[in-house]
Amino acid sequence: VQARPDELRQEIRWLRGEVDDLGDGTTRIRTSGDSLEWISVHLGFLSGHDYRIEGPPELIEHVRADAARRLRAAGAPAP
Image 1: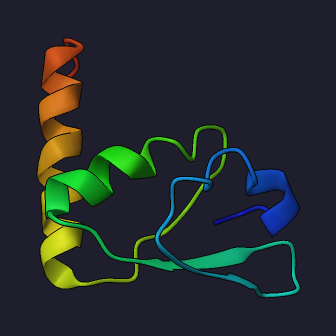
Image 2: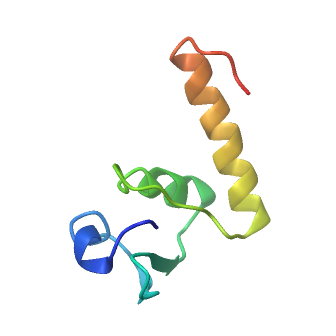
């Protein structure tokens, strides 16, 4: 996440997992959830901060599919 842990305090209070300050203004969040949907929904709490999902591949694919569905719902063409 492109933010320091103290900037994320409100957004990550729901987390089960580890928060690592990478020391360059970014934070790594390692978490798990009951389902891919759960994790995907909670990523939405990182509003206002850019982030990258490093894995697992199933989560990356799920988020891509969800993003395309949300674009269609908003009337935009899917990538």
